[in-house]
Length: 220
Image (cartoon, rainbow, N blue to C red; front, side, top):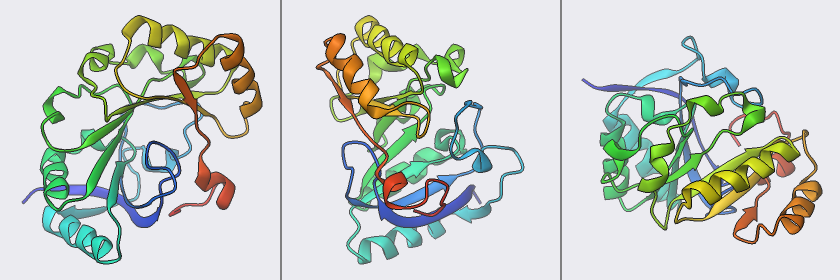
């Protein structure tokens, strides 16, 4: 029987992205193939990350319980959810339940095997401050659709300028977000760079959950 390493699940608001502020069920899976310098969920990334082995039917029940509470969105996150074997089955199942199924992925996993599963992607592109840019799978840019998203997590001025370069090079046909690393760069500085560099096709986003709750809190 196929199982998944589920680190935690909870209902909260989407803290970022196109559905920011809306309620969502979060399914956080354990394990990641990157080690970003500023990662805020490092506890879920290692091979020994705490988790529960759950079946597809158990995930279905968790999602059904959330839907019964009026939740319309589900976010698969991590770690890196696309590393879970059989995760495509989970995406299909959740989409078939009528839930908007968002997959938060780190940009280092090919998206092509998952394009027709019914979900939408929020794909990171790791900038210099992450120390992981060399692992990016740039071919993914050509696969992104209008309802997907590219997220550039920025910890420095260099990161913001690099995000502009990447967008000009690959021209993704979906919304582009600049997300400041909490505590590393002032969002006002990013706005000033956006103005100076004429970055009108980008959107600045703040992680709402880090302003509502303690930035280190889990399950929110």
